[in-house]
Length: 616
Image (cartoon, rainbow, N blue to C red; front, side, top):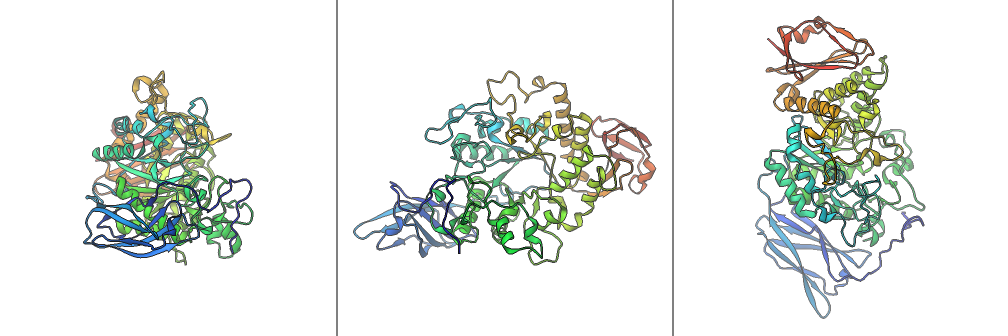
């Protein structure tokens, strides 16, 4: 039996009554015409469950099925059903006390039009995703830099540990820039309220699921950004965090019940050992530590076996899609969630929005480990319904290709071997491939700031199977290591603040190196926008030889040949070695330089790559 105990390193958390003047519903509203038409409304407020004569609803098409009272009298959970005949309007939830009554308003809105076409569109291998940490990209509205009453009042760009003032308006202001780069999809680090005392720039410690952080501009700025993005034919991915919340989340400061969180006798951190989840010989207690242990003392672990927590999280995910019109979810710390819960949550989203995209962060080592958490070809008891993951295995492999000498399973051979195992995925083209992100060192720094290696890696990113994702600033070769602190890979995009002396968003503000890298990415990314071979074509790779790796993307309309030399010497590339794919072609178009030449043997310098469209 779980003990209700929080160690002395945390603030005391209780579930006793507290003074509150109002009552809040979670979700804050719902919609008519939804498949998820049995909604559990959590009402939070001072002694709300002490309504002696209970609760009632008198609204056509809406029925109160059950009133659930829990340990904390500040909460009540109402199960309602919404009939297909129900009309939009204000549902009055009547709270019937012994000698008085009052109403709590709960709005029913009309369901959005354009499911799968105008929103919840999903992303595919045709897309090019750009990851942004809003606080560090651009400050478009200085009026929200500090919000009175919020715990973190820091605003200091001279340190990576404080807030810098970037916001959603800053992103909206630079959609032209992103479109010019060839970006089709934005993935934002979390935008929900993080009212924590410090390190709030990353957004991963929610304190209120139903509030867009006002320092980012609030709900209006988020609506405006999503709408502006969609008008350009672009898409938005939101970052989900189901596993944990911030210590100052209202359900932690005022627990609905003892087992809302995963509680331990003493503070217990997760082991980070994902192997225990699929190991047939695993010790059950160690499997539990992996799933139910906390990430930090500041991020309490939610109990996803609690049915009230399950409804709270799933309904919020559905609510965000319907309220803001996002196109998909990236799911944080996927392996640390209860996997049965994740299947239920994923299914609810896919049932409601058939084209939506769901991909999970799986920071694990090994193709077997990674594929276990998404749709795969294994005949095993647990079958994940997650569409794809962030492909850390190809990330480790391309990093090896650029930093380790060629060997039996070293250097670029690791990249070949990793991709050779794609048969374990139901659909490897949905895997999200990347060079870096907000948690790992900037790739340009990792490879020693070698421009040839960087361009080769970018060529791979934009031509390999899967959905390519670029981290903000990679296009201008931003630098930074996670040691001594991950804040150093989250520096500002210079030019995003009016005080900046230069503007890297413009060609005039970029130095020669930055412009070279920017132009290289823009050229390949914009070519990719119209290349059927790179978007949806088949993939064929040849065994690497002496550091030279060659693969093809092709379909009935187009063939693209990618050659990477990962050795320390110039290499002669013999076209005849690849005749299974080159036969019938006589010319090549260098996608970057736009030069057309005869298809024949050529030399390729150390750590260089070429992307060639074969022509007849």
